Length: 236
Image (cartoon, rainbow, N blue to C red; front, side, top):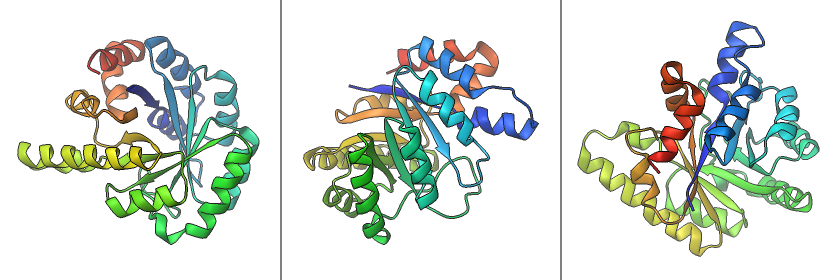
């Protein structure tokens, strides 16, 4: 079953840039769920330049569907999220981030750390996931570590130079989602997905959450966020 997962980071980033209370990502969550979104995603960066820890606490109480928090792979972040208890934690690459989009985690560089964190999350009834590059070895390593989910980085869609290369990339993503499913993991996807190609993603049987942020914000500036969410779901 395909679900639209709304990424509220662009809203939080604008709010923080304005150094104001608005636009409020919490209000956007309410509108997104009214519009039919079935999952909310936020990226808890080390510098908290998108959602802040106080936002996460509010999200835990406000979100009625499903709360997936991405975070850099650091001990401090994990401890905070264990207290907040979102539905899922998605690990992304540690280190300085120069954009709103998280970088895929190179799973084999952090095997020992991940084993411990995955076990702690499971003990606290929190699902574990990792944003990974669309590579078979990363899928296999995630399976060995017994992640509950993987999130495939589909940002290559935006870099496709022509229709043929885009179709090839989509086929690779689909094949990787099949492998992940066979290894017992759910599959989410993000990056490079918008109104123009979301239908291509929904043709992949084993994709569950389709994470979208900036395209929804861009369209909502003209038509409103709730309607933007409804329009996206109508294409799924």
